[in-house]
Image (cartoon, rainbow, N blue to C red; front, side, top):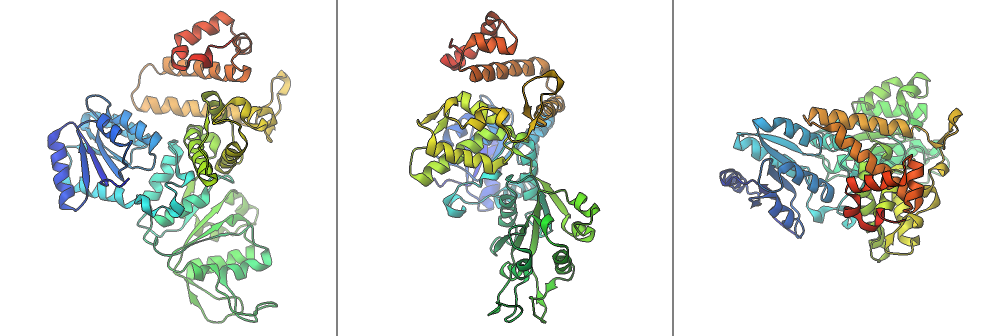
Length: 488
């Protein structure tokens, strides 16, 4: 639904008035709300492009409002307004997904410029490619993804070369598309080439084109990807697999700004922004002589690292809902939903294939799962049984159950990061809250594993049945989830 592009949320009428007048002078449409609760209700029917919200308000405060928006509408930039006494909270909000924070009292021109910058980094819904509202790899609340979002925003006015690193399936091409779409070159072509997918003897012609008769079979002249991307962006995926001789030619283009077609003698100017990506460690390939050091430094001007799914498990529910909705739309059926227990199991699966593997899982669920609500037993065997994970670490001398390699270290690192974040935010009672969440997670996973059988779950967790029952009651899990934790 179309709506005014900017929403202002503040219980102070004077602040709303100042912002309204500033936006009106700039010809920017706005809508104002005296509370976050009113804005949350409005979000059911409409969606703005930018929100600017105060922190301290009656009812739902700005930080809780931010967290709700980031779950349901992660694509909307939220600017947080704060008094100087709230700056610690504002910094925490920024780390948690706020686009920017604006300390009060603020300069009106500064506020307007900030809103305009946020607007410049978003798109009208009608501009989305193929009718999709959001690009899947770019959904997420994880801090590492927020760093990527901020980098895309900061690079929006630049044509600097970018190197994107990350495991296969993390969405490197999606990020390259976003960098192009939010750049000054957005109206020009975005051309993608996977250098590992093109045979070595054809790659040079694919990149630079060829003249008629340049080689056997060259019956006509042909433009290469550099010419096709003129004025726009050329995305070179899996750059680490490029042959050394072609690395030399690419370096010459980046340094001289022109190239020759295969068999050609006329220099062709290259007005192209190059974005490269790799899942490999280029520093190691430089040391082993497989990648040119001078080309590496040319490409490595700005580096963006995309986190694997195991480092952003909090994003899995958002991505899962998106992929289930998209798969259902493509098949013309109602979208399926995962039960709480099934979602919890999926959220803790390491996904070695990353976002691509999660998308494939959602397509499988849409086609193969029998009911609208997907239970644990409906999930594929490899998701239900971590022992079937392809990369396993042996149980060692302890004789314990095998688990995915590195899995234990990942959750401990995540815990350390969470504690550090809360300490920076000035929180107290951290251990009590995290212990509660730890126990609740163990109980949910135990009951999910045993199909809700308390006696068996208690035994596996190392508790007596009465202890498990007491813990469920203390944590309020029965009241919140009814039968899910109350069986057997």
